[in-house]
Length: 537
Length: 65
Image 1 (tube, one colour):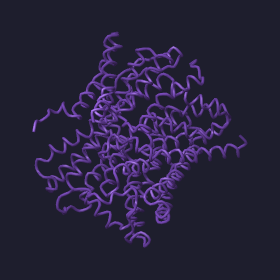
Image 2: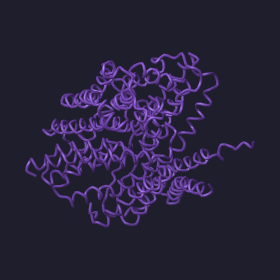
Image 3: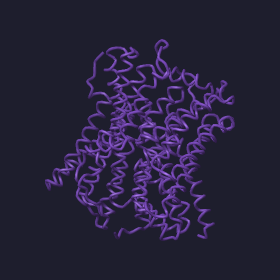
Image 4: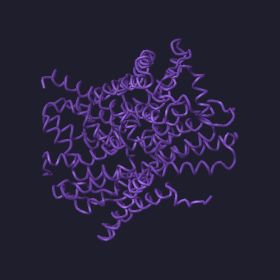
């Protein structure tokens, strides 16, 4: 590859991301409006300056559409699940149930937005935690935009080892550290950084809820939860990284019940002037008080958890269900600068029977049948549920498709590589401080910690070798940065804004969350830099 | 009150944009196999047309308001 890494090429590569961010943050455009402009910019830059031909653009776009269809297959049933739950009046039951569980409003929010979201990330991922938790938070009275912010924050730390370690496996495979002495140190650095991010998450939840007063009230819970979640993950990652997140989040889910019973948390407590709480509106179902019990309201979510465990955690079942895969073949393409996109016999195979979307579809269908059998949903309401689902899902489609195509074109023409390697060249040893930033950029571009590790794992490894940096430390920072970046990934934000009905306000969500993301990445980066200096770098 | 058909509503128009955008996939995929520049060109036209129609519709609606 003889791609010139110059300031001019770097600025050109930055332009699609820059335009996307400016349109969303400065002009408050929704992602559906801003992303197509980003695609056009990336395509023009690719065609004129990065030596991409017509064929390459067409094939990378096709890959993008295919990947987007797989993502949309999560969004569509996630909305259906929300509409079924809403129509049954279950959100009002959640609210009442949460008050019985603990009368402390802050702990209620932390339970749904952090502990439950982390648990879902531990087993499902693919944006499901955001799509499921955001409406639950809105249901207990959190403003919809804030519900999305909290759900995004809550799942972040669990991204690397969550979804049964899929992002971790991607890092191990792309760097080849599986059978080397780097394996355990990298796992420990990664889980150590994620523990810090987990603590930051708890602090952010409290800060957003009620600044210092809430931090004081929430601190014991923050320490206990993050110790169980992040600390547990760190210990289990030594033995089996693939289930370390699942086990620790399951333990936290059990522990939160006892935390709620502690004298410090079992008395009524809430801040009336909390900026994230909607004190005026009536939430949930508007009809007479439902006879539904809390456990019944959770039926679709229990089905989701059980189905995920059966479909994804029993190897023979998973192997059998995974045997049916759909995918298209793609030929190898190359730019005039020698950036090669390898050919595939079956590109990004879609396994419909084990896909998160199928699990959501099963949960929403069985949930509907249960609610209908108990008469919590009136006959004939199914048409309204489906109509509302379509109205919510259609507007997010273009945004998801465009964002993924943009990342494919940028990746396939070398623009993403120029962005990362240009930065590394200029910074030298100080690159260590920016290593989580590169992981974050990857997750922002691709909306996935796993894809960020595939995109930049090997690059970070090569840069660490070239600059004589601690490879395990840098790779740990890469995947931690990817986890942080999952909070600002536009496709994930859309999942949340779609499910709570504030589509188009992605810029507002991004504005609220980006400071946390930058601060977290800066903290991890500073830590990596200090360790590099201490190691004699 | 006059009833609008689904495709006259905002969601309906976005549905058309989505169908055009995602509908370009077979054209983009098979243009290479068929070695047809026209098919690929039509695919990209549908793709960009479908995508860009969304911000164009939003801007023109905002201007009317």
